[in-house]
Image 1 (cartoon, rainbow over the protein chains, first blue to last red):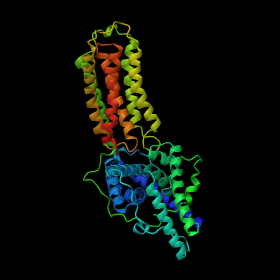
Image 2: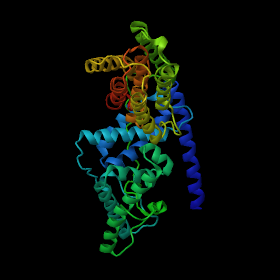
Image 3: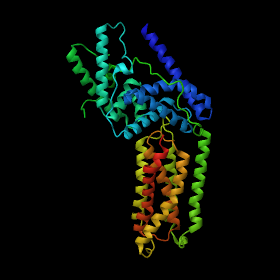
Image 4: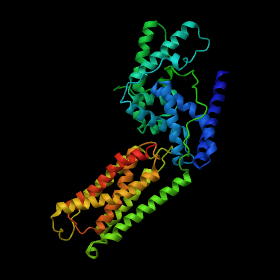
Length: 207
Length: 230
């Protein structure tokens, strides 16, 4: 049952993304009204991506606006038939990197899950597992905050944004092997943080 | 560094701290008063930039004229330094704006190879190729500086035109792609310089003409890229 729901969701997701690609192609051709359709589909994803990269809700909102402005300005450079998500993620990443540089590499301070919203609730979770999920979310955030931008970007794109290695490599301007290695190094750092939590609680925290 | 091969499926075991929260999106995104140029407008701007730059560089020959001994210059020399750099320059421009697999530009290895190889190849070939006729009299240092400056000055307008035509166009690899635009402009200027400059010494060609190509590529990488990056 859940498999068919997931399959339907995946189909709907693909359709939505395809619609966004077509809308972006129209927008690039000068059809200004098409941006509303792009906004509806792309903006929530970009905001989630930026929030995962920078870890701060307000900053992510600012970076989203900056990304949207850059998308407006660069629309003519969008190639017909290209995918809008990798293109817009790349612009968002540029905005994040510019912002990080201008903040003189201030360490990323990730907000707590409560500030950004609850962690993924497990189906039928009891109170204890809910607390554990929250602790696990905090541990992941701590590990993400402590790692380099390059590792965090690779991990976020592959694990949370569902990108393929090839697409992530295009977005990051790196080789596929480099992206895999960065993501794996990020994974090891997060796994170490989760292992510490598991030792403390005596329960498995992997989802 | 880890000595283990990355096992990417393992990533799925990591919980998503933001997973359950639907982000609050402001009702309308930021919009400029006027959106950027559409694809057709951008194509027109690029064509105009190309024509203006081409006309400008042709004017270099129109103003300075071909070198006095052009009739005696071997055809191979003219082809190697007057024609091949123009072809290479256009190839650089094409590589810089080619959309690539996802519309994010060509692969970084290709861009870097071209951006490094063409200017270096031009400078090295200028040194290795020995002109088959006497060196021009050398009081040469000042001539060299003059020629370098002139070549670089002629490169500026194409770079400015590229800045207008390509502003905000490169979402990835803007530095390498802008370096290619700079190298492309530099190579075409170097070709016209070779056709008009009466000095044919290896050092002069290497440092004055080849150096200008390298300088143009650097200008592209470090100045133009600030404009072209989205």
